[in-house]
Length: 101
Image (tube, rainbow, N blue to C red; front, side):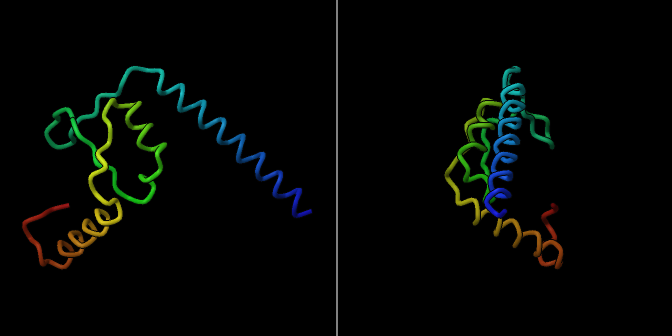
């Protein structure tokens, strides 16, 4: 019974993955997306991915294919998240009053 459940779950996963791949390919067939800075409205020229999921090569490839911008891999994603957390805590505690997130 356990083996049948595992096989069923594997089939469901493969089907969901196939559907997600098809949807991604449909969206990638359109022209490159123009990514703009949310503050000044300027076109972005560099992207740095942070967080654990950004280590997956598929995320970088999807971003590059969608926007035409190759993500920078010059920083440790986990350290970026930790630093951002520390900055946010400093803001919330009133230690750093010059920054706003």
